[in-house]
Length: 148
Image 1 (spheres, helix red, strand yellow):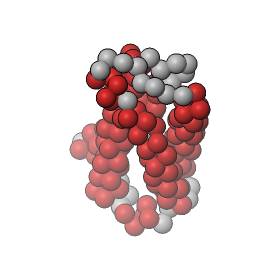
Image 2 (spheres, rainbow, N blue to C red):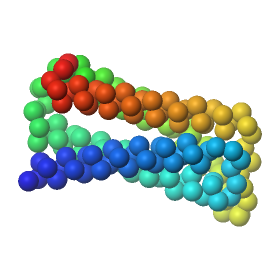
Image 3 (cartoon, helix red, strand yellow):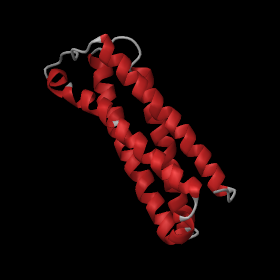
């Protein structure tokens, strides 16, 4: 029963993560006004919390509830999945830093000053995050079928 609960939390975190990244992509379309800037800060926090839930539940599954650490450390699909998870996490730092830099302007009730080049760069990175998540899902499917 506990194994199913941890798997559920893992999947729930994954769906929340994908949804939050997609929301960031939508919220960065067009000009970033005060309302969208506030929303982006909140959604980016959800991205971080969801990623932490996915990682924590995933580690619990690997160590205690699934096939065991030895299986996963020798599975190429798992190693690719973990590499992609780390890569997506690393590239997500840039948008997060931008969003956090807006806090003082938002606190003053002002829209953040952001140029079109920065927004395009943020959207490109978020697009890469979404592509990375798709590849993570592919690796998960391969793992589930014993490939790797």
